[in-house]
Length: 394
Ligand code: ATP
Ligand code: MG
Image 1 (cartoon, rainbow, N blue to C red):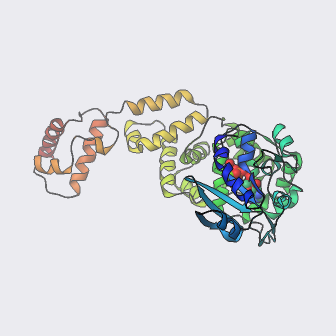
Image 2 (image 1 turned 180 degrees about the vertical axis):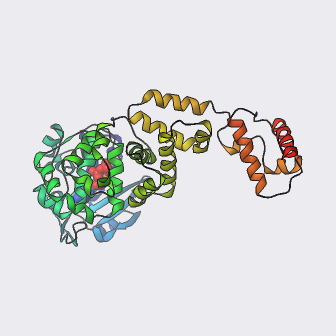
Image 3 (image 1 turned 135 degrees about the vertical axis):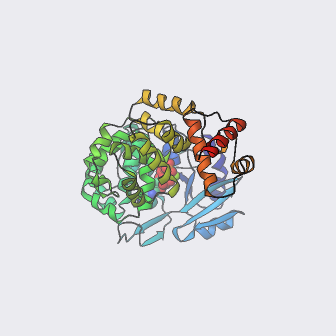
């Protein structure tokens, strides 16, 4: 047992001791078999939520109506979900109805991919009803049952397929990819926030190009916000599989390749409902990347966050030398942020006998420009001296 599962084993055993079935399911089983780090430990059980709440002292009602109770066990949270089937799916996203069942088989049948439909008992026995282990060995993502039906039921699964492809570096089984192709347009029914989560994970994954290729092949990209407006091929052709960590770097990569101005970036990111924080940094980093030639003042104004994002983008498009040069240029700036100035508005007002007002801000900007242009040292005495001369002349 890997450590996170070993730690959770007593939880399974307690449910069993109360006379119910309990299993580890989903991603934690998949990642254990792949010998990859486990994100979260999910449990499935034949016990109903009320029954789980009687077994454990500390529980949280996470989603009782969907059958999920969180059990707190030795400072860890575990989501325990009652076996269930889903029906309805009138709107191509959430099932209209979930029905609790007592059979593991029915629960595994509703899961998205065979590699996610594995369960493990406390004895270590693996329950593999849909050849999930074989698909893991073949590095293949395959829908449980008829791909076409499964994507029609829940269109988000199409984004999950390409996301897992990127994270695991797997192929998508032909019938499953065909199912995506057929149902791609249904993605429009899914809330942008949920598509967003999967797309970010895809872009952060290690086989991003392969996954983007599948989005192209199946035309899935056309039903993601705004992506059909730009040259998606370029994204595949000019991107490497180098790590991409920050969300802002992902958007800035698109902005750089598609040469988006500030307004276009805003439209793109608003359509994807990204945070304003990410929007600002991504916009600035993109302008930095597209600004040619770049001067030190532009670089200074971009600040450390946007410079880091721009560097990540350059690395991911394979421009490592340019990335290193940008980093060096940033490091060698005589000043990196206003907080590092050896002077402030108060000191200027006192030393230069200036009244408070907007001109103080202008003087501070002037000082920063002069320092960045290396015409003035970041030293209190030198700055005051410079300002006195400047004020006597203007
Ligand atoms: P991660 O490592 O990203 O957490 P995961 O496989 O655990 O991967 P989750 O989103 O945490 O993914 O979902 C847990 C499990 O629930 C999945 O492994 C899968 O069995 C099932 N599942 C999740 N979303 C869906 C869906 N839209 N349709 C069918 N089954 C799903
Ligand atoms: Mg999970």
